[in-house]
Image (cartoon, rainbow, N blue to C red; front, top):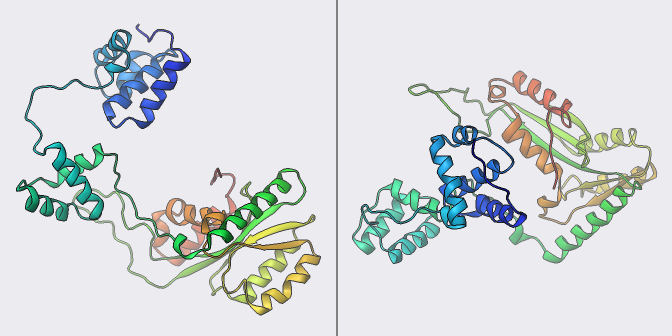
Length: 332
């Protein structure tokens, strides 16, 4: 059995940095293999993990002992030279950043500029080497909000957090959300030659009103009807009956929360210990319950829940009753 000799703290720091940040997947694998070998993971186990021969892992260890960090990266080898020069590769990356949705358009522009035609697969490899990733584009409201109001809201929440940590005032986050039969997951793994069909139904929606704290203690209410001002106020009345000390509830600036009737009821809730704290406009990042809705819609609801309204109701009831136990969220 061979293992990496004693790793110093400096060695571990360098290896961990390489494993997380190096552009080369081979270098990341080798650094991780060395980190595993240090505490005593066998060569066979590392080889099985990375689907390589045990002699390959043994070579990683030997080259590390003789060459150090220089052993992580492959040396230049003979073979077909790259089709694009470094300048043309930089130009291709510029085109990818300008046309991030279509590599075909990138290939067409590159061919017009350099008279060299690249396959889509080659452009994908070029993008991956530059540490680009294909992922969903985020819709942001940051351009609409007031930076000063956002910073002030952050400071107010931090002050409430200090009071909560000291055991003085608990804090909950309140919001409404809706789940419809039209699934939020348009992609799924399917067998070759088969198609996973879902009923093309645009009707059928369940609305959820919830109070949740940072410990994922959740009090939620489900409705098939629309969530109007009276429903939200009734939920706040019911929540007041469950609190004993003064409790801060953070909520956004939805029209229901800023209506005249809602604001007229606030002094009554305050007498019962419920203190409402409004977030700055366009600040979903500060509203932790939004993370719960995102997990429910995009991770926890099973694909089968889109079959019919009863299946959706059953899935939501199961999720909402098990938040904090079976379904967990870790807040940073």
